[in-house]
Structure formats: C-alpha cells, structure tokens
Length: 261
Image (cartoon, rainbow, N blue to C red; front, top):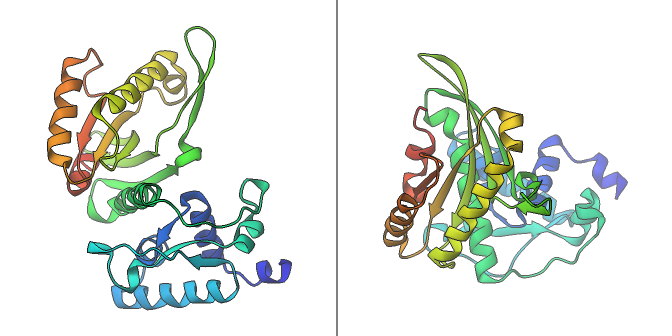
C-alpha cells in the first residue's frame, strides 16, 4: 500500500480525498473539479484515463447503478472508493466495505456534488468573485450549545465562503447550503430552519465571522417550483431576520449565490 501511495500524484490524492468526502461522484463531477484547466475534450479524455488507472490500482470502483437523463452516457459512471482506497486515506480510521447506495442517498450525494461544482466555477462565471472556499458535509457541520447548555449539532450539506471585489472594495460572502431533492416535507425543512435560527442565537458564528451566513435552500425534484414557492411563502410568514433564508432551484443557483452582495 505504501508503494501505491508513493506513486500517486497530487491530483490522484485530491480525487481520492473528494470521493472520501462526497461518498459518490460521477466522472463528470471529477472532470469538473480536477481537470478544469483543459479543453472539454482533453479534460474528458484525461479524467477517464486517470480514473481507469486508479481503478486498476484497486483504489476506486464504479457502482452498478447508473443514472439516466442528463447524466446518461459514459460520463455518468458513478465512482466510490474501494476498500483499499478507504484504507489508503484512512477514512474515519476504518476500512469500511464499499456498498451500493440507496437511490435516495445517491441522488442527494450527487446533488451536493452538483452544487459544489457550480460554486467552484463561480470565479470563472461571475466577474466580481475572485475565489471560493467550500466545506462539504461533516466539514461544514457546526457543534454548539443550546440556550439550556445542551450540546447540539447543525448539519449543513455545504458551507461556502466567496471572496469578491466590488466598487466598495473586497468582501467575503458566507453561505450555508441545504440541498433538497423533493423527498422531505416542507414542515421538515421549516424545522431545519428553526435549528439554523437556534444556532444564530448562539452567536458563535458571528464571533468568528462578524456576521451570520445566509442560508440557501436549493430545491430539486419534480415539484421544485411549487415547493420553492411554498417554502418562500412560509418563511416570509416567520419572524426571521430579513435575508437570512433564500430559496432557489439548481437552475437559478449561479444567479442567486453569484449576485453581488
């Protein structure tokens, strides 16, 4: 295993690390995250070649389920770490056996990756944004104490910091992102909103950043438009600070999060 590790490039290591964080990524996701400096044709060819080599080394493996629609085709292959790959980078210190994810888990994992990829591209698609920092899943989680002193944990799907420049100078824009695939009820989403407000009242994020991040709900699923309108309406009726919550769809994500502050 040490010999294999010594032969891996920095890009190989980053690919394995991303698979460890996300759990499941498509060839297209990995192409966008790690081969963006090439032409589309070259990036596609290189990503397939690198993933094939990592598979031959026994570090990654495709899942059997394929995703249709916009992900159809060879770029739709979904990858996960093999047991050896997990052992190599010591995921949670345990070499867990790879497994086939449920459709619900897979859809959410890929939607989180879609969101990360859109945000990662903002410096190239939005002139006033210069750089971004993204935390995924457990790296984005916040542990805190409630008003009664009990220990609590807030679990965003993703946290993002955007560094930009406008006519007033440099700025940092902070976000928590929640990706909804249409599988949870609106009351469940509102319960999560109350937890965000609970964390806001704790004040720890404001102590660190000076402000509380905006919370962005990204609504997917077949009824996304209807659910987006419903969640917006209910949030408008709640007594939250203005602008704390925003609701959008995957199609509108770039325009929403990339808008100048």
